[in-house]
Image (cartoon, rainbow over all chains, first blue to last red; front, side, top):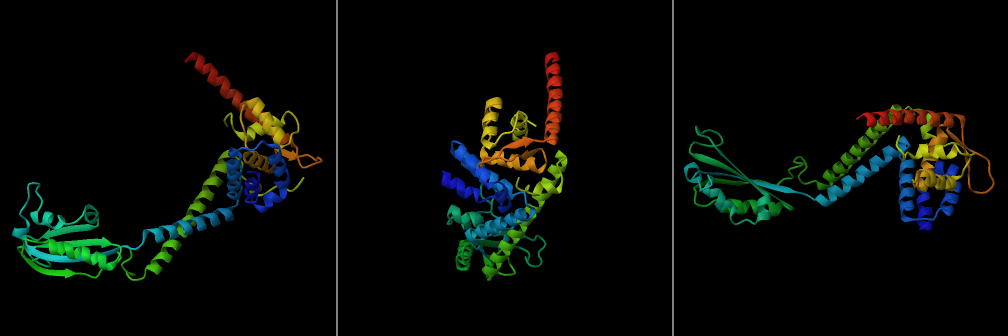
Length: 235
Length: 97
């Protein structure tokens, strides 16, 4: 435990260590050490580090970048595919006992519950007819998300195949794309770098807000003054 | 300020005479039944020294005693006076409640 504490003391700012390290070690030699002291010394190191504006901004920047990087890497890519299908409106709008179009039930039936979470089905009826839905037709927009472009396309194709019992007029399966970054559908690396930079900027902003908050608290306590960030010189 | 405000506990401890870190910890434990960890203690000592409320006194050996300055004594006195007001008013209101 003493070795761990020696390591933790090294985490204190160099300026602080120059002034207090010897006497702090003398105190640690005197105290019957317990685990709570390890946490206390670690908390003290963080607290000392958090007193320098530059350190706070740096910690915010690095923490944001690391969290953003981990988030981007673990989240992975999501590809989305979509198909638009025109069907006969009268056939499609036959309702089941729950008031839902029977055709929708037939589309979703073969899918597992996990697959159902990844699909969305919208339908649109134009009573007067027009573009893009002619009179007497219903436009079904079937979309599905998955980890690869091919898997997303396959999922949507299963939805299209599931539209049974109604007259299909046209089927269009679109190119899969990244919904969160439609301008760079095939550049996940660019997306990741942007994600990390974005998170780092957020970390920097949080650090800056922390500084403002700490300065406000100091003013409230009437302890403002430049000396708060300065370590006293040796006796 | 609360009973466990470590800065006030350290000032109150030094009001009795110069002490080094471990002696301050033991004194606080004795008079306030509060355990102040070494990291917390030296965070407080750093702040109080920055504000001119305590100062190190020359000593032999690695243990560094601290002395309560006039500014620290005045600050402690003011805080105790404000606490006494709170205690007096609070006690009176409790009796009449």
